[in-house]
Length: 93
Image 1: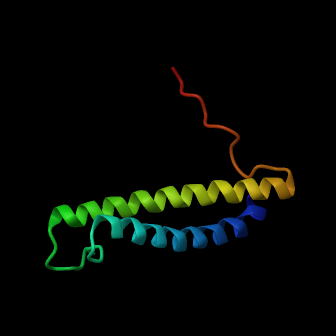
Image 2: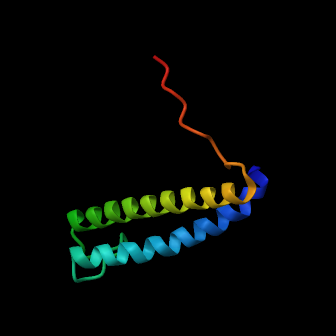
């Protein structure tokens, strides 16, 4: 099943990257009118840089998780098999 899902996973990862960039750009526009700072910018404050990086990471993780779950759902509808675990493993006590 992993082999069949691999191309779907690659394409959904690319889609998630594009969507993540667009969502982050819109969210950042609400936070600040300037473009988000990048680590290679010399004249940027640490709080603004770290805030931008944290927000970007959170947005990308959210979008990637949502796209991945949706692509697995679509794959399961087409094949009848879920490509992955059914549920998280219970914690050992």
